Structures are given as structure tokens and as C-alpha cells.
Image 1: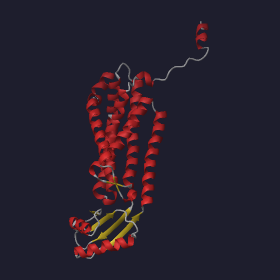
Image 2: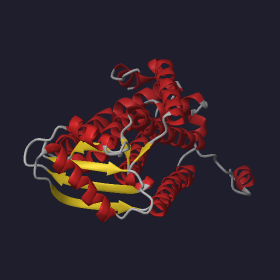
Image 3: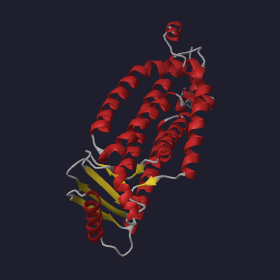
Image 4: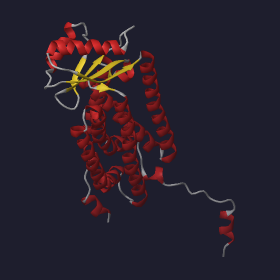
Length: 316
């Protein structure tokens, strides 16, 4: 039976050194980018003004950026919002300037510079204090989620599995943040929500794999820890593959058809599902194997009852 299982097993742990080097390089790159480039925080965290306008004809983004710079708005970020005629302009915080006055000024600049009729769709203003509060609360939300998960896995699993699960979560969050830092993508509240969702997805996948490894350690004897982990990963591979594919199909639809409003959300989740699947196969299992997980660690100790030995001696 064990020979048959080994024949139908993918040797995942055979490539553990390559996976360890690959993950280490990605984590180092993410940390370096976060230290140098930092995150491109959106208006939710920095404060400022968001203005959405509509043009009669397709807008030229480069021309609009030049208009903003020529009129003293060097920090303006201009991008399409759903179609080539809908444009969103993000401006940094302006002291002692009302959002309505700023919106009228931008509208006048666009109409004069392009010669088109420009419609104001919406204007939103976020103050500096509100942005700081959101940043603080968002960071606390992520920290609280990680602490709660740490407490849960500490009680749920043997400590080697618990450490592997926590390292995998840290790996996934760090790489997702690193992606946004390296590419300079805007980090707002929707992206923060996506990262919290990635934490849940990654943990769920890791728990499924860890449960199967623990079960096989108790069922399969005279087999090395590496082979038991390979067998367990192979048995859960179809479940992991189906779950990931169906999730990615939904996220791909959001990414390509969902519009600019949830583009960051879909990007974070798409990347998070990839790294979450990878980490549940390699990072969590690799850490547990590196810490020396074995069958003896997962078999509960037999506690002799008081007087049991005496009773055996009295038996005929």
C-alpha cells in the first residue's frame, strides 16, 4: 500500500532548496522595495481630493497631465476611469483650500486647455487627520488578524505546524505588499481588504494541507517525514488546484471587467491566491520539515492509570 502511494506521489520536497531560495529572494526584494520606494498610499490614507470628470470625446491623458503641471498641480495623478472619456484626477492635500473651489478650478483648466465641454461627475475630499486615522486603523486590523490567527494555530496544531503556518502568512502578506511597492500601484482601503482576504485564503489552504500531513503521519508507518509530506501534498493537490482555479476565474473577471474602482482589490487577490497556494505547498510544509517534524511528535502519549500495573500482576 505504501509502495503504491509513493509511486503516485509528486516529489514536492525534492525541490525544497530551490523553493527556499526563490522565496528568500522574493522576500528580500519586497523588503528592499518597501524600505526604498515604500507604498503608494491612496487618498484614503494620505488625504487629498479626488475629482471625476467626463469629456465629450476621448481624452488625451498626457495632455491632461501637462495641463495640470503647467497650472501648478505637479502632484496630480490622472487616469482613465472605466472608459476613455471618463477621467479621475487625484490631488494631494491642499491647505486652506475648499474642495468645491478646487474642483471649479480644475474644471476651468480642463475646459480651457482641451476646448471640450467637461462635466463634473463627483468630487471627494479626505482630510489629513481622517487619512492618518484610517492608516492606523487599517494597520491595527491587519495586526489583529495575524495575532488571532497565531493564537488559533498555536492551539490547533503541533508547534512545528503552527510556526510553518505563521511563516507562510507572513510570506504571503510581505510578497503582496512588495508587489504594490515595486510596481508603484496605489494602496487604498480596498487593497487592505484584499490582503486580509488573502490571509484567510492562505490560512485555509495551509490548514487543509497540515491536517492531511498530521493524519498521514499517524496512518503511514516506516516512511520518512519527507515522503509523508509528499504523499499528503499529492493527495490534496486536486483540491488545491480546483479551489485555486475557480477562485482565479472569478478574480480574473473582476480584474478585466470590474473597472478601475476595484482594480487594486482584484490585483492583490489574484497575486495573493498564487502565492497563497504556493506557500501552502512549500513554505508551511518546508518549515515544518526543517524543524524536524516526525511521527512521534504527532502521536499522543499513553498515560498509565494509577494501579494499572498492580492489577496486571494480580491477574491469573
